[in-house]
Image (cartoon, rainbow, N blue to C red; front, side, top):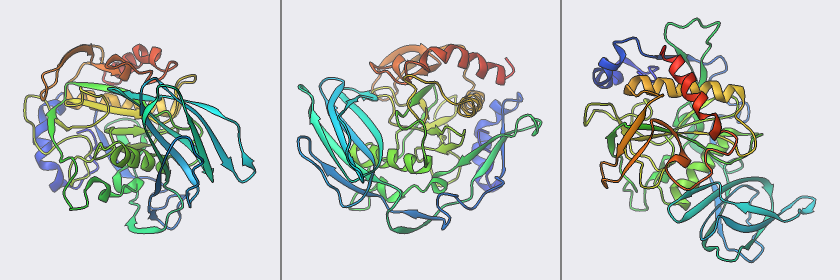
Length: 375
């Protein structure tokens, strides 16, 4: 099973589902409490801060009544939103261009780490339209009743722990997901979970800070931006990996602690919860995102190692060949695309994701994943 750090009663149904995939000695992950579990050093109280946010408009100075740590933008038109300037305690800083970090259909997106700014102004580019601006603070809000859960360290079953110590894993409670964001004012789930058999795996980068002082806060900002600003109903990715190699559970897949997969299979392969990371090609497509901007730099060694292990675990459980090609068929729309089974976002759409530096490294990543599987 991908992540087996679960109480036995909650694993039974999915263990039955995935038994054939595991019988061949596929990559397994077993969990044990992390050495420093229970306390986040950047949040020693253990409480989850409430999200502070406000919408803004282009062409005028925006002054939220809180420090802005992340600024989310989406727009239509060209890939350039315009130019942005930020005010800090020492005054206004210079104008800088805002380019799309990601695209879905006709919309372009960017989530910028700007903290802690006291004001901002966007001078929109000619042709940029339907601009959405959202100032976000996931660090300084008042404490909520939610609490961080202890993290777990995931390891490869049967591996030598001295050589393969595993990686730190944070569930949704572990990084402080506010589950109320998935529901509308009337209490109904905005986008109820739907499950489809896994066909392929796709790698992304989030185009956020490469020297992130608080990755969990960034994951919460991505969640808010996706769920509320972009109306995806939840965070779009299934799993995320930060620069230290910590793995984060992404999109909600059910009440048990197992990420990505559903309670039962609808076809020959394990079924995954439908995400929102590749417009038009989400169903059956697992999205794994590296935190950071990989346009001009590659991932850290820790992030690269965790990504390899996560993709190998996913490939093992779903019986996908990381060196193969998939004739993808969207089970909802019927849309088709022939892609590498382990693809980058730009293999599906006109986007620079997962970065101009990292995308050329995908052939080696496929080889490394296959090696981790013993192929």
